[in-house]
Length: 89
Image (cartoon, rainbow, N blue to C red; front, side, top):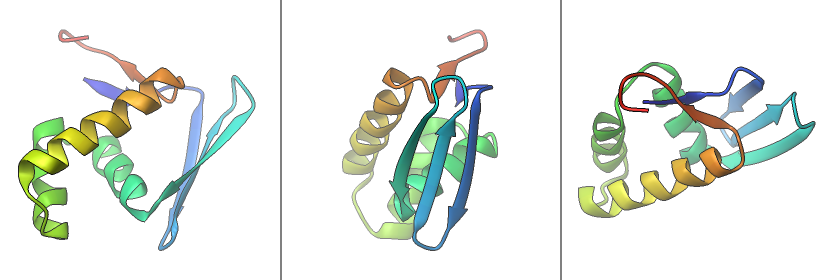
C-alpha cells in the first residue's frame, strides 16, 4: 500500500495543491486531479478504487485512468512523497 511519507505536508484547494517535503526542503505543485488522487489515497482508498472513482468523475476509460494514476503515484514515490507500507510493500 502506498501512503504519504511522514515528512510530507500538503494542502489542497479548488486549483490543486501544494506538497511540501520537510525532510528534503522541496515543494511540489499538483493540479486539481493530482490533489484529488492524494485526497483519496490519504483517506485510505485502495488504488483500484481510486482509479474507478477518477474514471467515473472524469468520464475517462478505466484502463486509461489506471495507467495515469499508476504513473502519477510512481513519480511521487520516486520523489519520496509516497512510501510503500504494509504486507504488500
